[in-house]
Every structure is written in C-alpha cells, then in structure tokens.
Amino acid sequence: MTSPKTVLITGTSSGIGLAAALAAAEAGWTTIATMRNTGKAEALLKAAEENGVADRIQVKRLDVVDPESIAACLDEVIAEHGRLDALINNAGAAQVGTIEQMSLDDVRTAMEVNFFGVVAATRAALPHLRAARGRVITVTSVGGAVGQPFNEAYCAAKFAVEGFMESLAPVAATVGVDVTVVEPGAVASEFVANIGLDVPALLAAAGPYAPAMEAYLGRTRDAFASAQTPAEAAAPIIEALTGENPAFRVQTSEWAREFVGTTLADLDGSAVQALTRAWVR
Image (tube, rainbow, N blue to C red; front, side):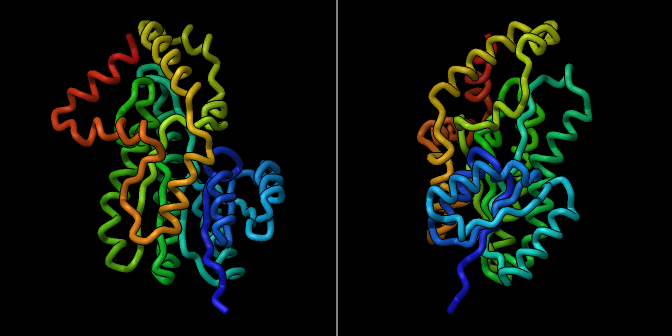
C-alpha cells in the first residue's frame, strides 16, 4: 500500500496554522504540526481529538529562525515517514510601529521570522519535495502586496517572501515542485493578540506620529471586528494542497482579492497611496 502523503506545517499552535493542520488531517494527510514551543500544543491536540484526526497529527518542535531545528525536524520526518510531499510555511510574527521609533534590531527580528525563516525552511525541504514532486505553500498576507502604515518591517518581510516565491516558482516547476502563496486579510486569531501591544504606551511614545497612529489603530480594530475565522482562511490553503494545478497567488476572501487587486493594477502607485493615506487621517 502507498503510504499517506505527508505535509509539514509551521506555526500551528493557534490561528491559521492550527486550522490548516486540522483540515489537512481531515483531508487524509499525515500532518506534521510544528511549533517553536510544543508546550503550546494543547489546543491543537484537543481539537484533533474532537475532530477524530488525532491519529493523523504529529506535533514536532521547529523554530524557523534556527536552521539546526529545521534540519532535525526534517530528518525525523523522513526517518519516520519516508517522504515529505508538502511544506506549508505559516509561522510568522507581527511588528507594529514606524521606522523612526523602531530599532534596527526590531526590523531584523521581523525579517528573521517572516522572511529568512521561510527561506530556511523552504531550502531545507526542497530536496525532499523534489523527490515527491510536491508543493511549497506559503502564507504571506495582503501586506505582502499592499504596504500598510505602521507595518513597514512586517510588510517589507512579506513583500520579500512574495518576491522570493514568485522568483522560485518557475525554477521549482522544472523539477516538479509547485509553489503557491496564500494572502489572508484580517483573521480573528491570536496573531494580533500575540503582538502584545500596549496601546496607551504606543501612543504616548509616538510623538509627532500619534494622531496617525491613533487613526490607524482605530481602523485596524474595525477591520478585525469583521475578520475571517481561521478555518475560513485555512480553506484555500487546503485547496492549494490537494487541488490539481494550484494557482501561484491565492487570496482567502473576496475582500482580500479586491484589496490585493488594487496594487496589482496600480502601475504608478497612486491608487494604493490614496487608499492607505486615508487610514492615518
């Protein structure tokens, strides 16, 4: 008998990653659900039990900013399952602030987690994905297509991921590996809560940017009040995982499609600037 296909997903302790792990297991895949701190696996394991897929989900430690952790995890997967058919790069971290009030270390941290972590995991997985003629699916963001106020570092990292994957896709295709980026908009998950923002302190430290920051935070609160659920955002990821000939770029909602469409059709940049400037006044 052919062994079940195996997918490794990063950042599965909550939100989209947790929902994608459950959905992949429900689709019949052996699902390697990874996270930096496996002590946070309780929510995933409980949901897997409740959904009857606990036997198809295996939690492993993987820290995307630690190449040795990535290599060790992949070695275990191949030793235990003999194959890797797909990688879903989902791990990420938000970073709110404007550059004058951020340190360069803050920016480097955002790039390490959101960009270099994706590069490192993809690089390590590609030999196995070539052997399986598999797939790389990367959760980016609408912020990887539209630069957003007070998200300079985060959007820079997500833009970099999109450029990396768009460049890799035709090369990977020559060896049988499909590449897809998935662009969510606002998702009701712990991702935003995990930023740990102290809003009063943020505004107090914003100096001349305080009015713009206050306007931005108000707009963002409104956006997340009508956000997608993690399960809704994960559905297109699973379609890219299981469907034939997945598209390179996929959005997770009609709002995300319209939003990303703004920049893809905006040859001189004026439409995006008109849109995002309204967020800070």
